[in-house]
Length: 195
Length: 195
DNA sequence: CCTGAAAAATTACGTGA
DNA sequence: TCACGTAATTTTTCAGG
Picture 1 (cartoon, rainbow over the protein chains, first blue to last red):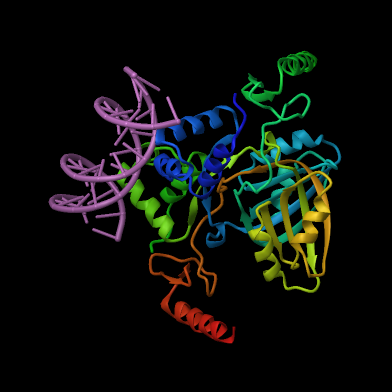
Picture 2 (picture 1 turned 180 degrees about the vertical axis):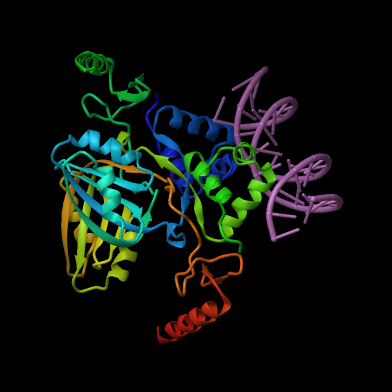
């Protein structure tokens, strides 16, 4: 896998504005042909940089319950397990795992039914939580102006054109060199065996 | 504007999973022809229910600074103005306006540069804030299983097929009846004049 | 990575329920 | 009004260089 260049970032930015824009139009903006853009997008999907194409729905115009923000602190369950359970819930939209091991997320619930919803979500586990009412929610796919680059899953260094990528259990990982890759794989296998 | 029906929701759900799925494939799933799906999607866009089509980028694979969650409480500036300023920042991804008038948002910043970033963002204003480190961020376009319907911008009732819609200052508003529409328009004009 | 042709998808339009 | 079928157009994919 080649490292990302400025053109890739520009393509991502343009797709973020409108993912149905024709590849030829994107190509015109970045100085490439349509097929070349198509190739790059395929590569970005393959590399796992692009998770997928989706639609931005204005939920404020829809009666989908009121938006609430929940800060949950799991007591009897590990946060990774709780995260999976929460992420799978249909009503959950945004989810943050904090460095302190708390799970913060936003979702929609019927008026007055917030606790009922959360009791069901946390069922059987001890979870402390705080609920905050939310008036407005926005999400921006923008990529920001900061430097972007693939990072090595083993050492954290930037992955350049010398790097390589591997698919492990349906997830793509990038590495800056083959020794990082093999070290990562070994450790991964050990963890797998232990589980 | 017709009210939303089950088919519209299913279309939105399918587009949320993959917005580049062909309309004909969506049609097959909901029992319509390709053109019929196209018509409905156009209507949903026109109505402002669909904000746009976008791409979901896995930022965890990109070295785009570390994600942080900020809870800001404006002191010397009204929250609406601050919201605009924050929403326009390139580094901001998720934004929540709480019912208590606080602005909560997530974004990316270079390691150790969080305060620098926020000082620039809040420049000239007095804003109290708390920063939390975030390990993982997820966003789900899922619509949930709850009832959906357009809501009247004036009275909050459900908009049915008797309702009407108007575009004011490039924003679409839906109303359950014409009297709600005119009452809203009048008040809107008064506010405009005052500004 | 480009050009140019083939395949596929989207849109436009006339018709009918 | 809504949806279908067909045709025209656009877009994507695929081949060769």
